Image 1 (cartoon, helix red, strand yellow):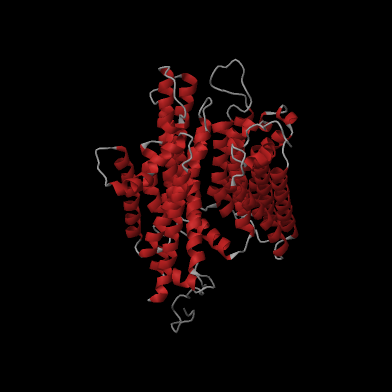
Image 2 (cartoon, helix red, strand yellow):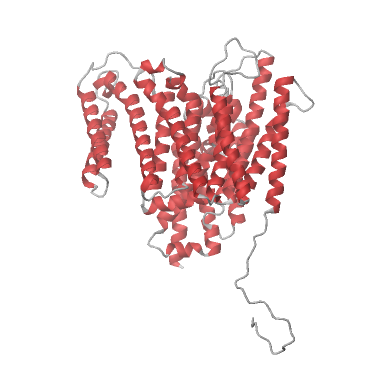
Length: 605
């Protein structure tokens, strides 16, 4: 625009100032949602406190179980959508407040609102302390993400690291130290081995969540971020190796060469072959440590030491008898399985962060996409809500049985998982997670761009499959954590066999959804086809259960094996159906192979 004019009587025009200032629209909807969430949260807290302190009110305590989570979910949506300085700092202060409440719940003797002959420190750690700490993490992440002031942001990031380290040490390291040095078990509750199977699991998982949030806010290619990730890997590897050695070595030395013989005293050549295969596997670790020049000296020396130790123990156990005459106490279930699972989780996070391998990088990209898109949070929130409703129904049945003084038969967790809501959740969840994997890439054309890079179809499909399966298992983690809040003791070991069987089923279901997503460009078509196949698996249960349905004789074994609900029932009874587990894993491998071939077919066209 010109600032000069030919008319001397015309008023002067203002000088041009470009570009014009652009003001972003205020997130009005998000603020309304946040206000409604705050109202529901306060109402739920008032309902819960008044019912606990003053007795039954007009609104019973059951209302608070829906008002409080609903209000928190709406407030979290506001925290993610609104990046205004005052708003984000308000939620940052709320994160600090939740952490203070978590510490208070952990150290204040309980129960608080009930009379007890002797109140115990840590009574309220689960669920209140763990729940408050989780809420602190939930609101600290958007605060650290949007905060522009480096002072506030550095405090938030350092707080994530400190809290995560403390939770990991208390939940994971302390029980291990207590099992290694029994005198420590008398020094405090956190050092007792039974602490691991209770609050220890929740603290270790929550600590890993805080550490992952820290790693998501810093540079992990070098510096402190890389060192923290590497430390997670070494911690996970150490815990896994300890649990594996503690569970396997004493049993091998007690059995000695007799483990290789039949009851009649003859050599069992199948057992001998398995022992030789184990020796070859440990020898392979030694060879890998010597051949992999690109690995760091610490990794190579650790692998070499593990391989040499494994070969030595197996050789001694195969040739020397009566090294140990007293059978060791049972350790594999549940402590060994829990430690090995947590160790692998910590190690997997470290490898995913530190490694620049092509397959690992693609898997990290796909897994991060679930936490950076609304679809992932919607699926996670919906699955958690369904699991929460199932948990409330389960606890109501427990309370009703206690009031009637009716003894419950173990395993009582079968009443929790062998129900309608978990089945419906699975039927809806798998199509929602898998429908966009390849169909969306095809529709937008990003798949062609991805495949122009130096990467083949196999790593692309496998990375999407592994990332989706990992997120699928994460969404079902609250199911087991909810049980930590159940008062009293019960046999929780069937939960371990259930999760192993469920993980194998997840391999098959995710692979089937991935295959249908590879066949089409339409997400809805992929979701419908996956849902239909999931219904076929469910119908197999009804066909097998109700004898009025006649099935041809040659199809009866197939129907019996495809019933995933029947597999749940067997796993929850403490019997791990190994044959069905291998079957579902094989189905997953087969459909992953088909998905790769579908992508490769574009070359033929």
